Length: 221
Image 1 (cartoon, one colour):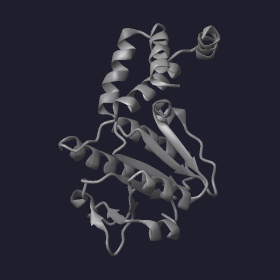
Image 2 (cartoon, helix red, strand yellow):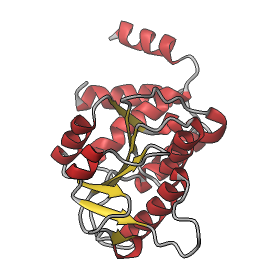
Image 3 (cartoon, helix red, strand yellow):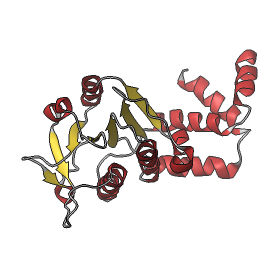
Image 4 (cartoon, helix red, strand yellow):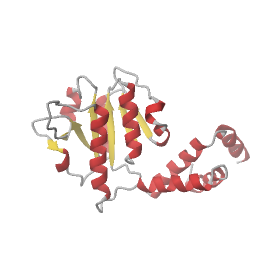
């Protein structure tokens, strides 16, 4: 859909949404980012995946990447709280494919795991976009991902326990890097074009009878 037709379609959809909802969408979009993103490699516990989805929405990350090699993860709507509606979720069946696509988009591949060359969370360099990878609950990230990683990141811990639940670790990292990012002059916001595309998608997801409305609209056109 070209820009002109997209604008007309958006204007049509806006008739079915309240002013408050439209304003909320625009305010949230102003805070959304693709500067940082999160990737999950072969997680199988539904509550962990759903909690990460919710955290992505809470901290304003628009995209979540899910690699499904062994497992077919489902979302728990009671945990995600419907956050999956507002994110772009990308699925892969191969780690290398996910890594290559993210690198082609300009992301550093960051393995969230203790490593000989790891960096502490508070010292992580936020001057360039990054994709943070989290591994399966029991075994962690695959050897393939560890070899492909550009950097290794760990959260400092001071107790007897040597690891955090994966959804907790993801939330801590997202909070830290996104908070620091928003205090800088970095170009972290979505482009006007990205905002309009997502705004249109959100409008569609907010209208119960959207299929009938779309059918009527495009029939007339």
